[in-house]
Length: 420
Ligand code: ADP
Ligand code: ASP
Ligand code: MG
Image (cartoon, rainbow, N blue to C red; front, side, top):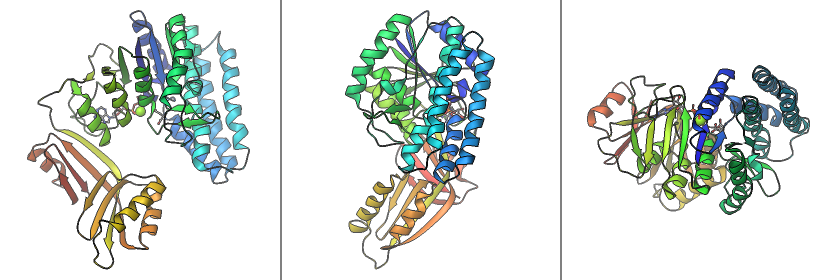
């Protein structure tokens, strides 16, 4: 059995969904398939805007934005479906009602709770439409609501999976359905608590869901279908000269993802490595291309790999009375970070000062404010974090030559620079 994951980019419109059907038809003759799908296109971003408006008291705007999302999905369903349209519509309306019912209320619980209840609809809608379309195209399949299978805690927006319960439900629900129909379609990124509240696993988390099910089902392989040739040594959207990488080790892939290469979610590798399941990142647009194979074999002679993260902010802390920053001040900063649930991408410590580089977000103002009670704090936004692996000095020079380097940190394999 193989697990295939299709991201938002691969199911963004009618033509793409038809193309997915062709891929599935071709591969399902070779092997039973579990298909993990994301929300279509940029639906998750659009749903985030709905939640923001709802939580800020702009219910009317939230409902209006939600109407746009409804219309887009109804349009896709109308184009794809004839015979199955009414059945699909009924299911979609149930999903719409779930959200609208909530948006008509006043928020009384946490932002993260509402986020998960609303945002999960993206994946539920895309899979409902695609399953109906597959039925119409005579691709037999079972649609499973992953919230009946993937159990998590209630740490909304970054929920932690209960592996034991999820494995039990996978054996009870998913496995027999695959044996019956050969194809099961379910949602990535979402799950639910033991009180049936919806949860999400963190942005871009569908890759992780696919790896979790691959692990539990001892899949022969996981294929993540992308709009690129495979994993490249830089984001080809930002660096058109990026080179395709045919083979990577789990170790290299986890490092790349950890430093922010957006092509794979960082949590994806561990469940695969633990069961030695190969991961292929394959080109959705040209299935004849080999894609990138990621497995346990070490790979030598890799070219320099570049990961560039924009929208970074640097927080500079300094003790007020010349006491060392390690010890009490550092522990207190750590506590604030845990409370705000934010993690730095880079930390540099000196005797009486420390710098931390973060993805820019509103919580940094709270961090700066709370830390300024016991430290001198400065915050600079609009920066970029460049990470290079397997670099030669000239690679580094090329990438920083026309920039103002604020911080540079290097080990034998990796160099990171925060630049203006
Ligand atoms: P999906 O919707 O399928 O999850 P994403 O847009 O999240 O797709 O991820 C695919 C994108 O990742 C590519 O279009 C590419 O621009 C970007 N990307 C970033 N880093 C890399 C890399 N090292 N190799 C390949 N693609 C990368
Ligand atoms: N739809 C979710 C997101 O956009 C999950 C995913 O695509 O992996 O973050
Ligand atoms: Mg993605």
